Image 1 (cartoon, rainbow, N blue to C red):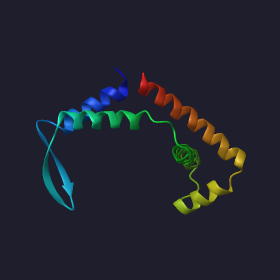
Image 2 (image 1 turned 135 degrees about the vertical axis):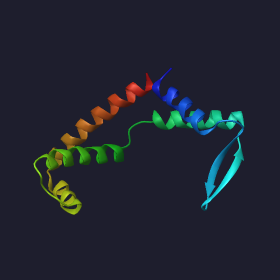
Image 3 (image 1 turned 180 degrees about the vertical axis):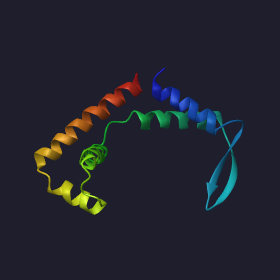
Image 4 (image 1 turned 60 degrees about the vertical axis):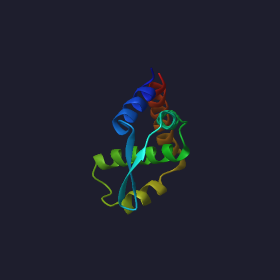
Length: 115
């Protein structure tokens, strides 16, 4: 059983116990009946999302977060706007290096999830 399949089963069991579950719409809670097929489809959807390919946006955000962590270790710059400006001023080669590192890490994490 893959990690994603295990997580999907745990998620479905914790959220959908019995014959109904609670959904919130416009601030109101409503009890909605569950059907075995719907629970199965939700679990399949979870697995599909958890094992989906890595998006460009994920890589970009992870690269930015890694760079911020390294910059923050020396204490500069202090505000989010300054981080964003500094990131944009980095050379393309430097940003690509961070993207490459984060893509490698994200791919390794996805492979483990699919085992």
